[in-house]
Length: 291
Ligand code: PMP
Image 1 (cartoon, rainbow, N blue to C red):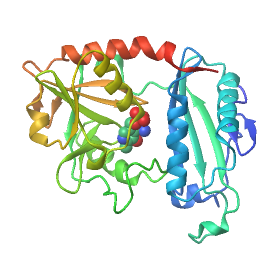
Image 2 (image 1 turned 135 degrees about the horizontal axis):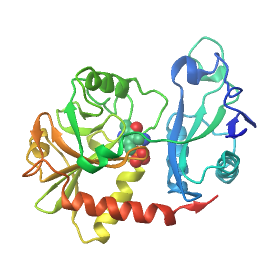
Image 3 (image 1 turned 60 degrees about the vertical axis):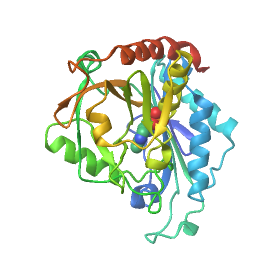
Image 4 (image 1 turned 90 degrees about the vertical axis):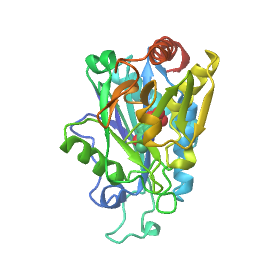
């Protein structure tokens, strides 16, 4: 891997990829980001990720200092320089350098960072046999506090949930919203299947509008399944026929146990989940925008 990490105007090596301690992304988590996949030298759902990035920035009154086409070119160049055909991109726009106060008016220039990487979040065994997840006490931040649709650098809410799960031996957690309904997982959306209908919490229930979530809905609809975006309770999850989570990093991960309850008749990866996973794997290598 050569000088492929973009930091504030130049490409540099891993050792030289640094931002200032005065950057408000570091001091306050003030900024936005995207996690993006590329498969077969094609950037998956590139425009949708860029749209969400610019929307997140707009929501926090952060003006990204390059237009979207220029930004896409920087990202493509980063992938080309990495030499990877398959990988993960972390794209970050922080408020930039300021003083030690909160005031973003003291940060004249946002910092742009693009990091291409290899990523394997979970072992193959988890995809083959499914994982177990658990509900944790920390609730998803309500939109009145920080709207979960904003993909901000401020992930402490999700990190606390992740710690609560890992403290008791689980890799992923169900996060509830303020009403006790299911919102999403710490870095993934959640779906369940009951009587061949596919359900996922509505965005208004406190979920990020996941790019993978939307892609899975498209695949499922094309395969003839009905999708319902609705309120989801833990009871719905426990009594589901199949359960899975989705995200750029984990893609589609089957879940076979939730809060100690085996999902479906045998606690095995379900047939519809397998079907969606196969379709997902087939499409991602041809769908994206070539670098
Ligand atoms: N929810 C949260 C809180 C996330 O951080 C992510 C990952 N970015 C997702 C859901 C899944 O979204 P996507 O499919 O766009 O990666």
